[in-house]
Length: 620
Ligand SMILES: Cc1cc2nc3c(=O)[nH]c(=O)nc-3n(C[C@H](O)[C@H](O)[C@H](O)COP(=O)(O)OP(=O)(O)OC[C@H]3O[C@@H](n4cnc5c(N)ncnc54)[C@H](O)[C@@H]3O)c2cc1C
Ligand SMILES: *[C@@H]1O[C@H](CO)[C@@H](O)[C@H](O)[C@H]1NC(C)=O
Ligand SMILES: *[C@@H]1O[C@H](CO)[C@@H](O)[C@H](O)[C@H]1NC(C)=O
Ligand SMILES: *[C@@H]1O[C@H](CO)[C@@H](O)[C@H](O)[C@H]1NC(C)=O
Ligand SMILES: *[C@@H]1O[C@H](CO)[C@@H](O)[C@H](O)[C@H]1NC(C)=O
Ligand SMILES: *[C@@H]1O[C@H](CO)[C@@H](O)[C@H](O)[C@H]1NC(C)=O
Ligand SMILES: *[C@@H]1O[C@H](CO)[C@@H](O)[C@H](O)[C@H]1NC(C)=O
Ligand SMILES: *[C@@H]1O[C@H](CO)[C@@H](O)[C@H](O)[C@H]1NC(C)=O
Ligand SMILES: *[C@@H]1O[C@H](CO)[C@@H](O)[C@H](O)[C@H]1NC(C)=O
Ligand SMILES: *[C@@H]1O[C@H](CO)[C@@H](O)[C@H](O)[C@H]1NC(C)=O
Ligand SMILES: *[C@@H]1O[C@H](CO)[C@@H](O)[C@H](O)[C@H]1NC(C)=O
Image (spheres, rainbow, N blue to C red):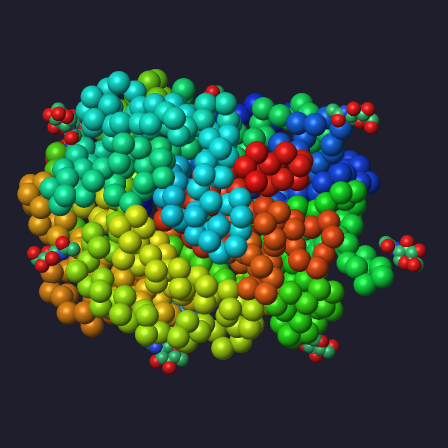
């Protein structure tokens, strides 16, 4: 994809021997099932971004007991986790579930892999640390779909609540003219939000190219107008340029709370339910260390809180008899609550790399080509917390409306408005999901040409343009493949099933060439390697997209918030329909993807969820 990315992985392995072991971790981390209390007020399933956030906030009340059950382990502060320049290095290790989307006929039958964190901290230990927000309209659409209290102005206080913002340092401000709007940031939260102290120099060319094309750079992309370009914050501790994960933010400093328990290496296998007088209540969860080991159970006095992420939360519901009765009977699971929408509405940002070779004095490739330079830069990182290893990339991002990046907008809009919304959905899509999708489809069409809605992300990486389709029309699903919880779920991204998505990406490839033609990029003597200058017709570009598209790792929407009659799985208090004592607080509940990397939105949603559970939502 891009050289620097692979370069980082290789270095990660080389540096593994240098891994600075952290002191033994102390606290209420339980290793034996017999250490657990027999019941907790709340049992949180999954210790990732959302689960650790909610568990932290609930245990602020010392009367409230919370158990987090996490399938993965605690990390050991490995370099590939803590060092921003090696971010992503945990992909494909034991900290990754190693999932793949099923072979997709719209992607030349390829199976695209979809990494997911299996580790305390979840995706926030694997991710590339980009910490940005969507624009106002992205969240106002959630509200327009019937979820009151979930628009931009309602979420902004929670975005702020989750972060500790640090402005960029004077050197980097002087070098790049970075501006910030401190009024939209919080300083009392737990996740560090800061700027890289080092940016690869060709980023200046990209910044100038964006200006040359007349695209505006926002004062601060976090202020609700992320539909131009902006300098990006990262989830990075500026004191020592290390990753600020959900574990660092919401767990490590709170292990002394005796009411907060965490058990690791335990996979939740199903929810325990009781049915009385026609009413179903979740009373606890069943879990196990491995498929061979005995199952244990623990009770929840108040609620079970699902935070296993958008790909596992629906699987666990299905295995517990909460889902589509047709699917459940096909895998021999008895239906307890027939909720056909569970696992539907899967959306993910589609990634595509257009790669140019460039000629520049210094790029990330120097780290792999010059071992002396790499060693010097590592020493600089360790002594002064700066230089390339302090940089996770993606420091300046463009999020472009269709009108900015394509001249085919009207034609694509015309095609969209003649479509029947159900045409490209799976033939077994439940009727209420079709109804809900039609509402989404109409909103997407309404805003397709809007200047305040970004459709395409463009991330510059030393000659590579990493594109991300922000508001895909296609919808996939998650289905438990078997009643065995240790069998991976069947995941269909449905990427590019709707030809509108393909057209929107083809236009993106064309636009990278407009960027390449600016004098600012031309100064780098770019030569297009992928797809290559000879690939020009729409048909050839479509083939390129189908053969190369992958994921930006942002699956959401599989237990969406919304009316049950419109395929909602949870209501606006995040309670699962038809069941008492069960909420979902993770990325599954997003009704629609926002045009941004999604971790900061996951944190904001989880902060709001915690307040809703406590009865103290500040922005109902
Ligand atoms: C490789 C990668 C790169 C990314 N890059 C970025 C980025 O740069 N910027 C950004 O904003 N976002 C990024 N993201 C997305 C972001 O990290 C996720 O959206 C976010 O972590 C999702 O939070 P969550 O709470 O929904 O799920 P997660 O953080 O995934 O947490 C779910 C947790 O539940 C656990 N779990 C699952 N099933 C079970 C079970 N049965 N029993 C017990 N535990 C279970 C998992 O092990 C995991 O720890 C990236 C994600 C990945 C994977
Ligand atoms: C904790 O519970 C006790 C007994 O129910 C009650 O008196 C006390 O006020 C509670 N404390 C908090 C912080 O809620
Ligand atoms: C993911 O794959 C890697 C490489 O094969 C393996 O080492 C790791 O254990 C796998 N992860 C899990 C959770 O099985
Ligand atoms: C994809 O697989 C199907 C079924 O096996 C086959 O008919 C089709 O030709 C394949 N398409 C491509 C592009 O390989
Ligand atoms: C920053 O602003 C100064 C003064 O306006 C200008 O000379 C310089 O080119 C700008 N730098 C960048 C990277 O835009
Ligand atoms: C970075 O600093 C934080 C405190 O600000 C500390 O908790 C953490 O352990 C440090 N990380 C490393 C790798 O030194
Ligand atoms: C169920 O109904 C019975 C008989 O009416 C009653 O005694 C019992 O309390 C009810 N249980 C619940 C959980 O409401
Ligand atoms: C379901 O049960 C039937 C009958 O016991 C069995 O034949 C079938 O293989 C099972 N299916 C699955 C998916 O486990
Ligand atoms: C980086 O690579 C470029 C291009 O190969 C080369 O000209 C330059 O000397 C290299 N610099 C270092 C420090 O390795
Ligand atoms: C490699 O890096 C060293 C240290 O920065 C530098 O002196 C040297 O010129 C570089 N080599 C090349 C071939 O660029
Ligand atoms: C891209 O460049 C071509 C050729 O100059 C031009 O016709 C087209 O309008 C440009 N696209 C956009 C979206 O500006």
